[in-house]
Amino acid sequence: MKRRNVLSYLYETAPQKPDKIAFADETVALTFRQVYDLTSAVGSFLLSRGVTRQPVVVFMRKSPREIAAFFGVIAAGCYYVPLDEEMPAGRIQLILDNVKAPVVICDEDTLPKTKDFDLRGGKAVLFDEAASAPADRAALDAAYEKALDIDPIYIVFTSGSTGLPKGVAACHRSVIDYVEELSDILSFGEDTVFGNQSPLYFDACLKELYPTLKFGATTYLVPKKLFSMPVKLVEFLNEKRVNTICWVVSALTMISAFDTFSVVKPETLKTVAFGSEVFPPKQFAIWRKALPEASFTNLYGPTEGTGMCCYFRVDRDLEDGEPIPIGRPFPNREILLLSEDGKAVPDGETGEIYLRGNAVTLGYYNDPARTASAFVQNPLQKAYPETVYRTGDLAYRNKRGELVYVSRRDYQIKHMGHRIELGEIEVNVNMLPGVKLSAALYNSERKKIVLFYLGDVDEKELGAVLKTKLPRYMLPGKICRLEEMPFTPNGKIDRVTLKKRAEA
Amino acid sequence: MEELLEILNELHDDVDYETEEHLIDNGILDSLDIVTLIAQISDRFDVTITAKDIAPENFNSAAAMAALIRRLEEEG
Figure 1 (spheres, rainbow over the protein chains, first blue to last red):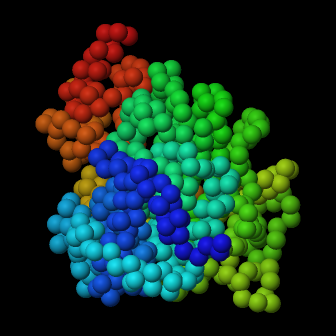
Figure 2 (cartoon, helix red, strand yellow):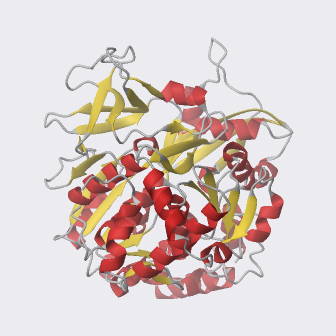
Figure 3 (cartoon, rainbow over the protein chains, first blue to last red):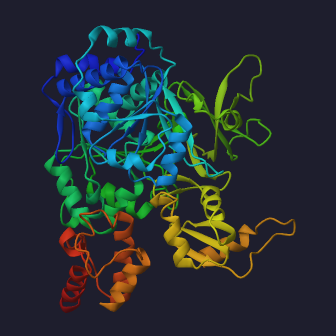
C-alpha cells in the first residue's frame, strides 16, 4: 500500500490493539483507542471551525494528551506548532508572531499564561474542550483524502544566528520515510517499549511518537526530574520494562559517570541510540560493559533533514582516541561532502555535509531569505531543479568509508544536545540596555558557554535579565565583563584570543 | 553551610535557598545543575557523592545537602 499520511499508522493500529497503552506518563495512560478518539475529536473540533491547512499552536505541558493534540491537528489537515512553558517568553512571542495560528490549544496550566502574549488573532482553547467535540467522520475522511504527502504536519523552531528562531516545516512524506528507515535500522517492533527523554517541541521525539503508532508499541514519557537522579532513573526503566531509548548523550553520561551500574542495572534495555553530541569514550565503555548484549547506535541529523539521517552501529572496537563515527546515511538519503566552492572533496578530506533525499524538509516557515541560503540547488548538477540541504556541519570519510563528524562551519555549537547559534546569544545580549558589545564562546572541554561583554551593567544583573530572554540551555555558564574588547587587525572581535580566555 | 550557599548561589542567584524545600520536585535544579553541583561539592568538601546519594531527599533543600555532606564527611 502506498502510504501518504502519517495518521495511516494510527488508523491501522487502533482497531488491532485498541486496549494496549500507547503513550503514558506518571499520571495519564492513553490506549490506542483513546488516542484515536482524541485525535478524531480534536480534528473534528478544528474542522467544525473551518480550520484546515493552517498552523495550530499546541501550548501544553508535556503529556500523552499533548501528543494526542498533535495527531488531532494533523487529522484536520493542519500542522502543529509546539510551544512549551520551558521556553522563555520572548521566544514564544517570536514564534506566535511568525506562524499567526488561528487556534492555540492549551491545558489548564498554560491557558492563564496565554494572557501574557499577543496571540496574533488566534483563539486560545482548552484541550479538554476540543477533545469533547463529537467526531465528524465525514469531515475527517474528507480532510484525510485531501491531504497530500507534501503537506506539512509540524513546524519546530531552532536557534537562528540573527536572534530570530527558524521554524522548520516538515511534511508527511519526509516523516514517513524517516519512520520506516529508522524502524528498520533500530529494529523497532510491537514489543518495543520506549523511554522518551526528548522534549516534544523538537523533532527528536519523532523517534518515539510515530514508530509507536506504526507498530502498536508503547512510549513512556520519563519524568524530567529523574534525569537528575540516576538510580531512580534506571529503576524507572526497569519498572516500566523499557527496552529502547534514544537519548542525548548527556542523559546517558549522567548515569554512567556516577557509577550507577554498581547499584542498579537496566535489566530490560536492548537498544540504546544516542546522538546530538560526542560520546566521551570512557563513559561509552562503561555503558557497553554494563550492557554487553545491547546494541548501541550513534545517530546524526539536522532538524532540517527530518530527525536523523546518518547512523553508526557500534559493532567493532574503536581505536584509542577514535571518535564514534556518524557512519552512513539511512537508505534513500545521500550525503555529499563538498568544498566551499561546491565541488566534491577528494576521499579522506573534510567537506561540508549536504543532504539530499525526501528527508530534506520544506524549509523555514515564513522565511524565504533564510530558506534560500540553506535549502539550495544541488551544486553537483544543474540540469533540473533539486533542493538539497546545506547543513553547515563538517565531516570526512575514514578508511572504512564511514563518515566522521568534525565540527560546525560557523559559530553554531552543540550544548547539552541542543544546537545553539552563539550569535543568537550575542544578539540578545547586545539588545539589553547598558551593554555595548558582547561575544559568546564555547568552552567545549568544560561544556560551558562563556559570555564576554562591554558595558555598565554588572554580571549578576545581566545574568538575571538573560534568564527571561533565552532558553535555559542557552544561558552562559560564565559571564565576564571586560574593560576592553580584543579586536583583530581588520576590526572584528578577536575570537581566538577570547576563546583562549574562555578555556583558561 | 555558608560555602554550600555560595555554590548554590553561583548556580542560580534568584532562588531563596534558606526556605526552598523542593528544589528537585519543583524542577528548580535540572540535571545539568545537579552535575555541576556534585562536581563543586566533591571538589570543595573533599567528599565522594555516589549514585545512591543522588536522590531527591538529599537535594531538595540546602539543609538536606548540608546533612548529606556532614554524613559523607563522617563516613569518609
